[in-house]
Image (cartoon, rainbow, N blue to C red; front, side, top):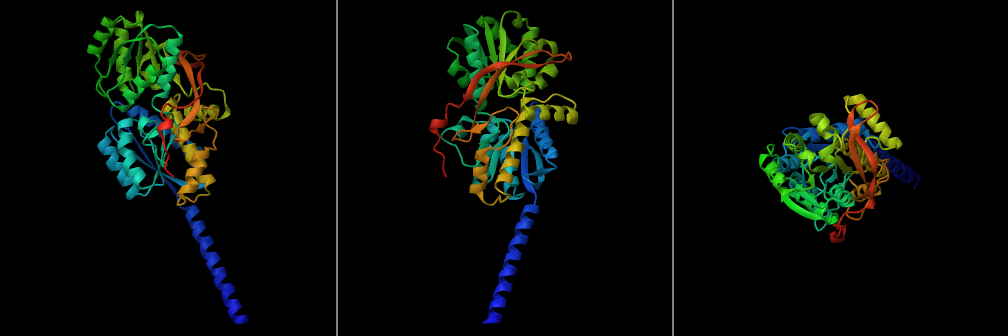
Length: 396
């Protein structure tokens, strides 16, 4: 009996040691993130900023996520849904990433969702927030660290309404996020919409649209034209003399640091709405802005801020699930809790995994250093939730 007992104890000790070694090996394995973004073409600047913000957060965490080594696999989707879907399929099946992030454009995000969710891989969005994923197609593997597509435009609609503009022309690209933008703006603006124009995605010449605006007699123009589209439109709008008679408004994307740098003085006085601004007074944001300027030599955009927060959210989820990434329920619970200090201040998820957060008004002006940049003016919406959450029946 004694020998059997000793054997049993030795066997139990061996099993325990084996389990401990396996757990140790698991925590030593890298957390793999597929950062798939637009890194070429007219929208490349947006993807570069997401990438740079994300990688900065990982670097500041000692090149770790949740205490485990981090492996970031960066890929270019070329702003193409087909390329995005194929690359995402490779990342989740061959590279077996633990998380996906980085998509800029909604049409690419809608294509990438299918292979990502089918592989039960968590997607943490650093930008695109499709209305579909907020509503009837909400998914337990999708979390937005940015906003729902309509939200910045809803805030802009409220601003234009409050400022008393009576006749507004709307311009947004002819793709899903462009349609979300127009719907969001109109949800809160109650004046007359004199025109709705949907130019082709990545269109860069706006001669026809400029002529239509001149004929419309609008007193304000609201644009959602990301990347090179916005840069070219604003240059052509000002060159045509329309800025003398029409006030130009946009979401943060169309009045951000990348656009300001490309356009220059013509941006002065433009109002835009955002969930974030580089002059927000909280410790997490001050550290982010200072470290970003130190690392890259430029002011961060909201894209960079979203990339940074996406990394911080993943970091918190790995940490709070104790690195057990095979336990999907534990990782989902940790993501949902969102226990990290966001650069935008208070942050929490709604039941559809989209943020409930504040939206602010910014104006483009000169700062104390003489730089043309954004200054936050005030809060437009407090604890604002998206319009689609009631349609979400979140599967378990």
